[in-house]
Image (cartoon, rainbow, N blue to C red; front, side, top):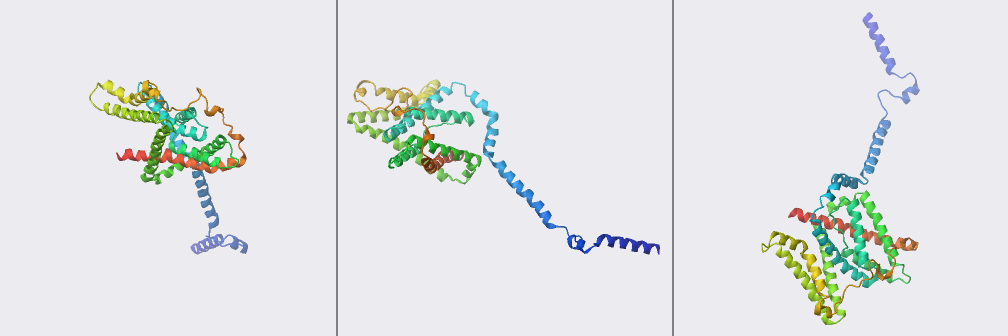
Length: 354
């Protein structure tokens, strides 16, 4: 009887705990059926927050990664370069920047009358200084390229077809400003990661395009000599061929065991600058000078082309032209993106294959 009473009391207690006491309780809180909507909401909300946080963390991740990778070596990249090898490197890079700068600026002078060799060299120096200091890449070679020159010339030709064209320098200033903004967006959103989908075919094709522009402008500079006398053009062609042949001979002599090691090193370091200075000096010597070879039109020392002021007041441009400059800025961004990233990745792929 005692066990039976205990069993009944425990059964009644269990039934009283499990059964609802009111119909309202039964409808609102059914036994052993937890609410799935609350658990699902709590499960989904953290995933949404985490995905948003992951997207925010990806903003500028490439820039931050580059800074962390280059920061330990930032000072050593500058201090390790303080030796004699800096001198021939400066001479070589200066000549490598001056020669295309002269060719491209000559075309811009004759087309737009807005650019000159002073603007090209000064802008190259400013861009290289900012890029090397703030980009933590002091060994990067910065200079004017053929596609950008063709792009500037094309914009000028398009503007001149308008009945009331804007100021060319003001308009091109807004084109560069729009391109800079898109470059910042590209860096923040890590769009350079899409380069992994670019094949070597695209790299080689664009590299061929850039090389062909360099060759075409070199030939174009020579053909301009025929606007004057035939003797002047002939002397100019002879000097151009002499410079190329002399540089090639110096390069080959530096690889032969004909001289002392120090002499071979000097020839390898200063072969191209010597050939450039020597052939340029021959145009001012003897009978070569009497041929009146056409030279680069230059203005005063540190003076902008056509006597214009150095400061370009691009903020004074009409509002409609600032909007029209946006598509040109996108095109300029594409040119820079390919020229800086695709060409570099293509060369890296070639080096890896070698």
